[in-house]
Length: 364
Length: 183
Image 1 (cartoon, chains in turn yellow, blue):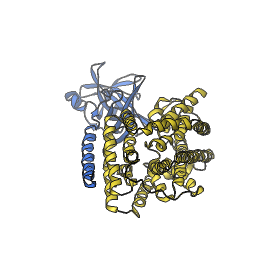
Image 2 (spheres, rainbow over the protein chains, first blue to last red):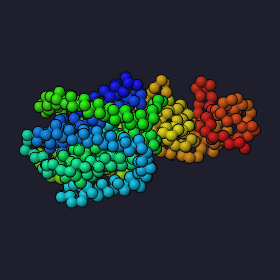
Image 3 (tube, each protein chain N blue to C red):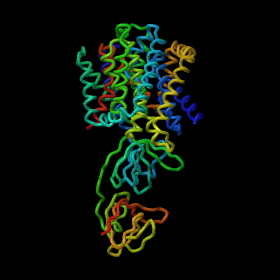
Image 4 (cartoon, helix red, strand yellow):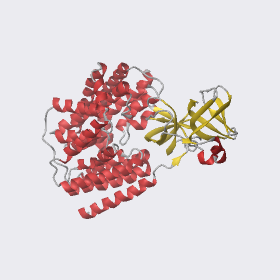
């Protein structure tokens, strides 16, 4: 089991650290439950590095791209990384403790109701459009990206090229150009409230059909005040979501993440208490490893990032590997829309129509 | 680039991408045709089911569908990527839905006259039991006879619901039973 745990952890951290990769791409190669949960935790911890240093999109952290980009451009990448990973680690611990005591079990069943899921999605859409400036263009972008989201259902791993196009490439192109980044929100902020709110949202996303961490992150973007709160919150959201999807699998059998689906597929099984312990152990070890490796990782990423053309070429190669030619096509289309959003001066968060509209259609 | 031109370009690109994606839609395929790595849509019936998976049978073979479940005996369409492990075909289900609950009511005479019309379909047929073994029996009606693959072994007469298929090893049409009702 020790060997499986270690190899799982290494696979997870590679899938987190390599831009464009996701745990879902690699977890099907792991056939041991200890390896699966270890890979999931290390993936979560390392998955914050590429978006902060390379502007490549991680489908789970959704709109956290914006604050991470802003902090990176202000030279505060390390702070952004520290906030997000510590948020993830803390929420792992709290969610694992709650799951171990069976307190949250009935809530899994409550949130599995389809009407609750529909209500949450509609609420997020309404919250998105309240107080929007240039409402017509915002709605136009929302619907256009929604159409693109529906069309991309036949593309493998479509979210990665699509979100990298909306959020990653435009930010990369505007570095040093005349286009300004959205203004940074106030510095500093609260810690407890964003952390608790985000951890709860992570749990809700793990329990509710069609509500993903990326979808629910829109509420954090709307409600949280500063970039620091957002980064801490996103870490907490993703961490609690990972622990809760594993817990939800054990309690209700729901497959709300790739690792949970792989746990269902393999013949071996371990008790929930052991799975939670291994998840925590892997998260703590990965956090320590990230502290030790971050200096070297940052050097590698900075070297790549210095050469925009090389980085874009690398991103295209990764997209081609994971999503095929259709993914590359999708990346170009979504990049055009990402740049259009900046030109139209509407919030790029409206591009999340690509997830929201297909999610709504899923209820029909 | 001017904003208006970029806006027009975005709309054209989305439309073109939509056409491209539509061309990638999975084509209906049989279990036998489904190959490792292919993105397919398979129609058949639920041969057996567990909590998070079911076995789909379309008369040409079986595929284990992961990530969805339906009660045994339902006609279903499942869509997803196929992978093969140890010679067994699995389908990572992206979409699955029930398409038919009841079998087509036919007589053995209908089946004998138009076997191609019913191959791969879920049918319901009645008859008398002629011979039986542990996992099959023969059904006879109006002088026509067919082998039914089933673990259930009724005594005299039965109504069988199942998938009508051609067995290339035996060079004969057979029925793989989903339900057997004793008459």
